[in-house]
Amino acid sequence: MQAADAKTHLWVNRRRLRDYAKVGRNLLLQRIAIYSAAIFLAGAYYDWRIALAFYALVWAAEAYDIGTFRRILSTSTWDSTTVRRFMREIYVGTAISASVISLFCVSVSIQQGTQNGHFMPLFMLFSASIFAAMNNRHFLPVLALRLAIYVAAILFIPIRDLAIERPPLASELWMHFFTVIFVLVFIIECSRSFLAGYNENLRGRRELEEEHERTKAAYLAKTQFLSTVSHELRTPLTSIKGSLEIINSGVLGQPPEKLAKPLDIATRNTRRLADLVNDLLLLQKAEAGKIDFHFEIADLGALITEAVERFRPFADRKNITVAIDLPDDTCWARFDKMRLDQVITNLLSNAAKFSEEHAEVRVSLAHRGDDLRVSVTDEGIGIDEGARGKLFEEFSQLDSSNTRKFEGTGLGLNISKRIIEAHQGQINYTSELGVGSTFFIDLKEEDAPIHTSKMGAATASGIVAAA
Image 1 (cartoon, rainbow, N blue to C red):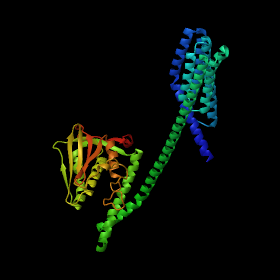
Image 2 (tube, rainbow, N blue to C red):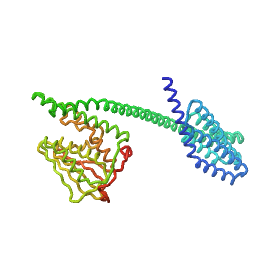
Image 3 (cartoon, rainbow, N blue to C red):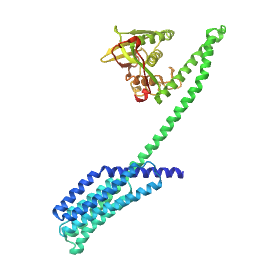
């Protein structure tokens, strides 16, 4: 517990120091502009020698502060000793800069005499105090030191006039003094408000970073779990699946008729489980950016035809008709044949799964501006508009109850989206409840390759992560 508290305390101090240094560095030009204007006015109306002497002191104080800021921002290794060293430098820099500004304002007030009202030096000190409250709120002791020096100068100016003139209470000099007290209360309240706001903001940032670390740890644990489970399941599943297929083939003899149905159920469920493991492995690769793509410019219509013909036996078992609409011309696109075939097969499988018997699934390819659009339309149950935000998420199911009618892992559309984005394309859908859905893929149309038969495959790795 103590170690955790020490780490948190170190993080807070490091964050405060870096914030303090960034603010100080970013406001350098603004401070120099203000000091230069004030010095010019003081020199023009009072004494150039005194004004230039203080201008040199201002630059010396700024040079010290900028050196401190640079050292803070360039430090990569932090411990309690580093924090204490930088805090000492900040205290010294604060004392020097605040004293220079205060002495300059006091010197101007002395040159003005006692009956002037001292608008310029008091205004500068009030402005410097508010500026400090707004921008030096990271450390209360540092802010308190700077404000204490400014307040001492602010009080010194009217008190000096009162001590020299010794006016009656009805004099304007006393009114100036009471006005100064009122403004000081305002400055202190502003400082307290700015400091409270910064502390709340810092607390929120710390909580966000802690939540980020917990999320990263959970993500790594999930990835490791999926990897371990998938690989551990794959080997025995392959053996079980192969054994069942050998038995069903009759190579070892025709199984008894009573075992036909149980063997068929076992085979189908084994295939489903194998598909789930393969999806988990592919998802893990996609998240790690390790999917290999072999892109080539090829006939998109031919790929669609091949995918539909391979899918047709499955559709026939459900008494579902699969129709194809292709344009007369050849449609060229740049894609990975295996991965895009996987996406189209997944869309066909979903269309058949959510359709009733004797329904029709229609696959079409059409020109759409500079793109080619592949559409898979079904006559199924349709998708509620409220599901649009989560349909392409991992493990997303429109019906996630234990008694849901339609089976599936909820990974197919998520993986399909990653694959299409790696192709620099888009995947989306339109749907109407009770009428059906159309899922479509848009890919950029390409010119026909010069040597189609000898077209080389270009390999690109990890594009999913960059998409």
